[in-house]
Picture 1 (cartoon, rainbow, N blue to C red):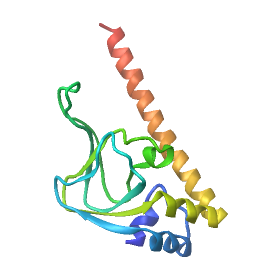
Picture 2: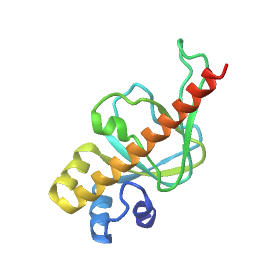
Picture 3: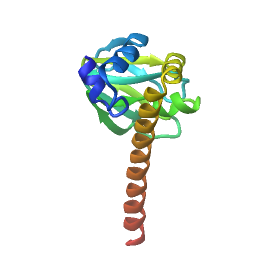
Picture 4: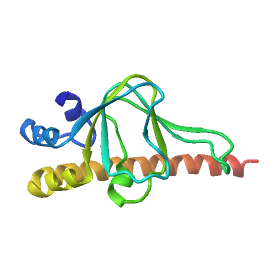
Length: 154
């Protein structure tokens, strides 16, 4: 399972010893198909990395949202929960298991303690998180540009 963790975008570039330290400070959790891992609007103080299986990120149907909106599917090496984990705000989407799924999860307190205790680990992981989040922002910007272009062509 450490190999999957090492292949994740967040922990890429860390040596085995540093990865093992992170592994020891977190734990694994299993989810069956349909189980909620994260619920939109709730506080989240864990970072999750998929070890095996598949999760769906979605916006659930609500009184003001007429239908459930699928945002993404994530698999081994992918992570969820970064936004609320970093900014202490409620989660922006829900996440449910699509198949039997195992994740690595680490609490915000343990994560920060680990990164603060080793500057190399902190630099690598925060750089990786920044790249991951900027990549998502760029993708969203491209989608908005396409959407605006399609609307303007009408």
